[in-house]
Structure formats: structure tokens, C-alpha cells
Length: 106
View 1 (cartoon, helix red, strand yellow):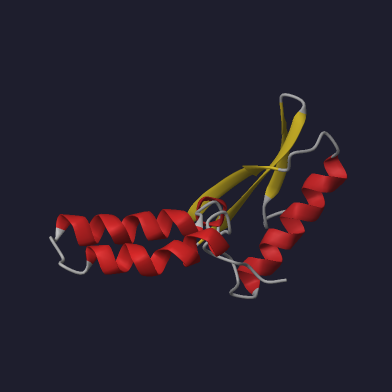
View 2 (cartoon, one colour; view 1 turned 90 degrees about the horizontal axis):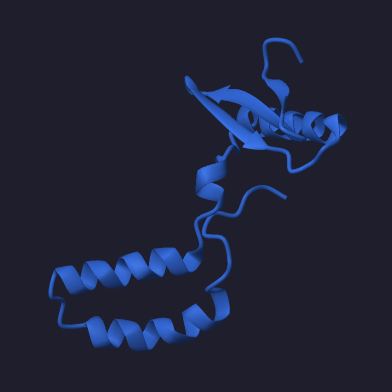
């Protein structure tokens, strides 16, 4: 995979590094096996070339984080409908609170 990215050993775990739009991304494969890191690097490169790349940081955003931001915006802007918003978001929070906000391919 020369020129497309790289894998390297950091401590006992294998890590991968690749570029997207001029920015380097590094992430742990979460494994001590080199093959797992190679497979994850191929997956990330496929996402990049297929215009489906999300990125590790965006992948960790939870739906509840977005709802918290929306409520904060309503609070900061003194919106009168804040109570109504909270009422309507209650079932949404219960259903999707721990879901990732960005769902990737597959």
C-alpha cells in the first residue's frame, strides 16, 4: 500500500495513517495484529475514494450531543419555544440518545 497510507506499531497496538484533503488522519486499529490494521486502512482508503469518508472524530459524535447543542442554542437566544422543544425532544432522546449522529456506509 505504498503511497496510499501506512501502518505502524505504537506500543503493542497497530495504528494507521492516511491523508484526506491534505490532512493526515491517524487512528488505532485497536488490535495487536498487523492484518487487522491493514484491513482497516484498506477500508478507510475505499471510503475516501468512494466519497463516503466520515473521519474518526465525526464518527464519535452522538445524536444526544447534537440535541444538547440545539437546546443550548435555544437557551442562548432566549427562544420562547424552548419548553416546547424540550417536550418534543424527550421521545427522540429516549430513542436515539446513544446512537451515532453520523452513520457511515454499510
